[in-house]
Image: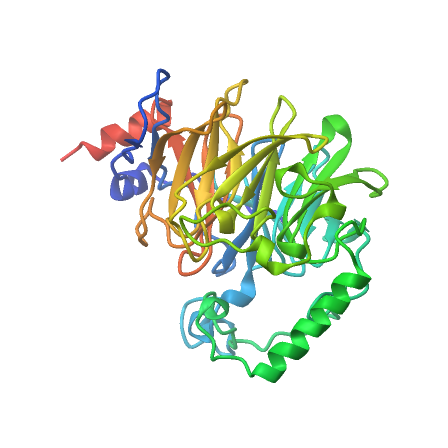
Length: 426
């Protein structure tokens, strides 16, 4: 299950090198602004005729290798002609959902698992995937070795637990990565009333303080120094939950502004956000998070265009608002930190704006930004996931029409300087 590639000829660099992405200063800061160059040499072409699906999880392990969690079922039949017998085109076939890249961009391992959302990797290499709960996988065998407790049912119905293996029909893909985001016809009033009654009954049965996973998973973060796992459960538009990493027992949790779980509102009106409107008292949805070296928790409430900063115990400290006029998928997606020891900057991905925001971590001011919507290398179409390695390289994962992972290197690094020199060649 380990694949290795020969080093790619420098002609690839010459063919694909692009100018360093210019970071536009939004607010004048005393410190130097982050500057990055798109790296067209990472990753290398995928093996086995794979085409990757939308990226729903991204993590850098202790060796600075990269794990990409993708959705093979995003691929449509037109992309899977290589699965037919005989094939009717050179490409492609579905990949496994977990793909492991090394620093050079080679695929060095993989395993197939149920699709999901959010992931992290611990120092021993175990992989934690957000599915209908958090499952811990042995990366060598792809076997589940532990999982968090969750409710035996979910709001609105739907499956709970790992599905029985289902053979995919070769060459027959899904409906594509954007189907769930397209407008739907108005619902029947009677059906709406029945759904609201069922929702109220479910929330009474499983109140906000329920000490287990109730909804779906948005993000997972391992804090090995504390032997803890932070989870963003999307029940009631988002709850921060903390579990013991060894026993998987629940320890604590909180909602928006650090409020105790029991005080999270079950009224959807308290979670609603209108672009440029007031901030809701509870999380609005698609909550992601990360924990800094100095022990602060940054919870990004994407649908409300904000980031809440708390202590590890949930004490609210401050709120950062980014591009408050953003609608649809919001402006605050994945949360990462710059690689310097002080983690001076927050590195935030925006799904809707297809931007990376660099924030001063002290006050939340936007130092600079990079990116633009597009399908060329270095552009984004559905910027979803973000991670930073120990050298300061930024890795991104896209959904929608993007369906890829990319790397950006610091412009003042040796490779960054080389890419800029190549871009200036005539």
